[in-house]
Image 1 (cartoon, rainbow, N blue to C red):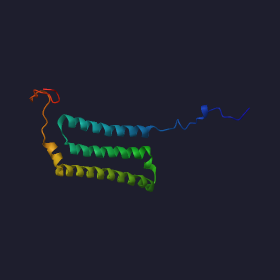
Image 2: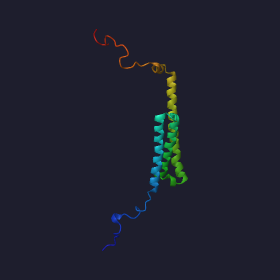
Image 3: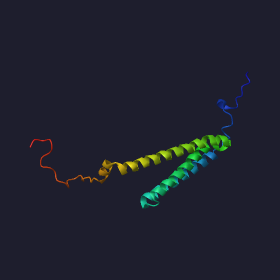
Length: 147
């Protein structure tokens, strides 16, 4: 006979029975709550027009960053790391946010300058478009057809 322990089935031990699921459910409810607030604000804005779009975008940005940092803290386990490790990941993430804001601002500046100084762009902006549906006269002779 061999000295093999047959009390555990398939080599599993009791570590799975002691796993605490409370932090997972807490994370789920927090993220669900933030998402529901975002959806509620969007629904209110679509029905009433309040709050103004720029305020709503700022609130969305703050709530989305809160969700992102909470996900990073929980699922990347940064909450339990030393301060230097947290800073190694947080500072480049903040630099990336700055990078995106800088490029969006620069692109908007380019668009405004183009609209201000490009005469062709200004002509296109002022041109009225004829509505489709017969409010304008149709020519008696179609272009390209023999008379």
